[in-house]
Each structure stands twice: as C-alpha cells, then as structure tokens.
Length: 455
Image (cartoon, rainbow, N blue to C red; front, top):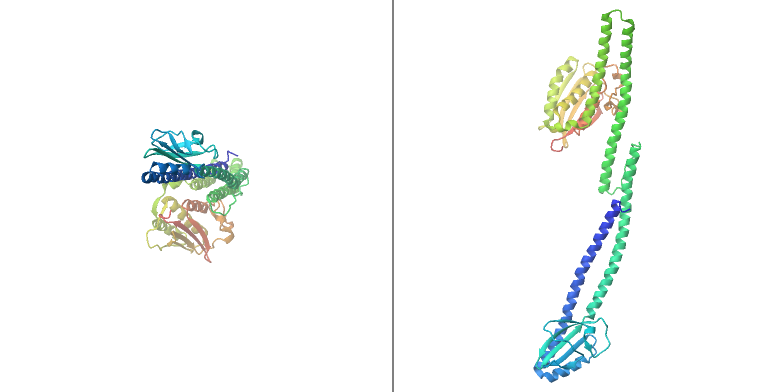
C-alpha cells in the first residue's frame, strides 16, 4: 500500500496538515503564555505599588500591619508576601527565607518556607523585591492560572491531533481508494488493449479533472491506434486481394512464354509485358510507403508558412490543359479576401490537389465541368473541388479513403486505389478536415485548413 502514489500523497498531506496544526498551536500557546505571564506580573506590581504607597504615606509600622493582613488573607495559596528590616530579618508575611534580588524571581513551592500548608506541590510564584523605608518588601503571585491554561491547551492539542490524524487518514483513505480505482481503470484498459481487446477504453468520471483529461488523451491515442491497426489489417487484406490478380497474371504470362514462345522476339515481348506488370506493382508499393511516411509525420519538420491560394493557382494552371485534352473544363475561382497563409509542405499540398483533379478527370465522362475554389472559413480556409460527374454513393464515401479501395465501376480504369488514401494522409498531416458532399449531380470535396495563426 505504501508504494501506491495516492496512499503516499494522502499520508503526506495528512502529515503536512498535522504539522500546520502544531505550528499554529505553538504560536497560540506561546502567545497566551506570554500574555498570562504579563498579567500575573501586572497584578504583582499593582499590589506592590499599593503597599509602597502605604509605606511612603503612613510609615513602616502601617506597612507592617498591611503586610501582616495580606499574609493572613484568603489569597494565601496564590499570593506570597514578606517584609524584612534593614538587617534582613523577617518582620511580617506568609513566607520567609527568600534571598533578595534585583530581578524577577520564579520560585517553586518547595523552594520557599511558607506559613501555610495548603496549595499544590507544583505551584510556582513570580515575585519581585522592592526597597522600603526601613527594609525590603517581597510580593509574588502564583502562576496556577497559567499552568492550568497550558495544561488545557496541551489537552486540546492532543485531542485535536488525534482527531486531525483520524480525519486525515479517513479522508486520505477515501481519496486514495477513489484515485486508485481510477488508476486501476487505466491499468485494466491498457492490459486489455495489450491482450488484444483494442476497442477497450478508459472510463470517464465526468468531473472534468486532470485524470479525466489524461483519460481523454489516452482514449484519443487508443482511437488512433485502433484506426491504424484496422487500416493496417485492411491494407494487408487489400494488398493480398489486389496483388493476387496481377501476380497470377504475371506468372501465367511467364509460364506461357516459357512453354509456347516460338522465337526470341515472342519471349522478349512476354518479358516486356511482365516488366510492365512489375512496374505497376512497384508503383503501388512506392505509394504505400509514401502514405506510411506521411502518416508517421516525418514531413512535418519541413512545414513552413505558405499561401494556399498560390498552391491552388499553380495546380489549376498545370491541369487546365490536361483536363481540356481529356474533354473536360477546369475552372479556378479565387474567393479569398486576403492571403490564405497556412502551415504546410508545398510539395505535398500540390500532390493532394493534383490527385483530386486527376481522380475527377479519370472517373468523370467527357464534358464534365470541374471547379477548383478557395474561400475563407472560420479559423482558416476552405479549398473545394467540384464536378458534375457521377459522384460517389453515400455508403461508399468513408471507404474511398482506404488504401487500395476502389469503387466497382472504377475497377476497369487504370489506378491502384491509393490516390484518395494519399489525399487523406496529407490532409491529416496538415490537421485539415475533408468532407464529401453530393451535388446532384456530381461530387464536392471540401478540405478546410487551419490558418497559420491558428496552427
């Protein structure tokens, strides 16, 4: 238990709270002690001043009578008094044998010879000597009130410390158990994920505290991990499915060439066809590696502040002629009111929009109008590619960004099914959001980039 962080934190805070209580009590204790000591000395001075006034006004005999009366009063257990003559002989009072001094004395009950036997053995007196007309006068007061107050404060401290420790231990145990339960939820979730249950997530308490914040980050990480694992699994399946046919076709061609080639020219032609199939497969693997590198974020170090409008304008200039040769029309609309500055990699952004335009040119019938536009958006800029072609069915829109995924009608056209997967990877690298919408007819692909300031 002592190795658990919540328990150690609870114990630490309990100890700190107890130390704080002791420190505050010490200040209170010494403050009250000092104040009561001053009050005792103040009463002693008042009594002394009264007796000195009698000596000055009426003489030593009247002082002796007053001291005799004070010594025999009912305050005898809390009050000591002694009058000695010039030779130091005891004249009057309820104590004797106390040596004269010029400073305040603190006398124990056992240190004085008293004329009374009642009182408490541990009584202490604060006393002072003063000269009078024919000798010296001692007046002292008991500090019993001070000792009782100190004893009461110490008793309260003991009870308070016990209560503080118990309350701190109970609260610490409750907090530790609650926190440990939430930490155990993290451990349980991560253990489940490591055991293969990739969909496991850390439960949220809903309090919005730091642990919930960390839990949300862990869950977001697990979401990304699940997405990557599913993408890898899907890619593996798609690679096996899509490469099975060209590999089988390649083997068949080579086998036919081996068995039935009549001349060196026939064999060379078969090898040329096989090399073409191999080049296509190599292009597929190169594209897959490129997507993997982009998703790993390695290109983020090359990010700089660039004008998105300039990128789109360059792409539109290059592909206007390409679209025209394919029987399409490409129009560029610059709807921005200022420079569209974003943080990004210019080369990758050109690749992104080139892939989108090539995809539209390849899969739309002749005469399709393709539009490329840029507009301001809240916190950034929205680039949009539109066409009036056949579009993409709504159930397929999430799937087209998967690697090697192709619509059924597109399987007869050239391509590897990686163009839109590369678009999605580049957009995610730039923290951009992609949205596909139906234009009835046609398709709209809107990509919203955060501005350079927002990024």
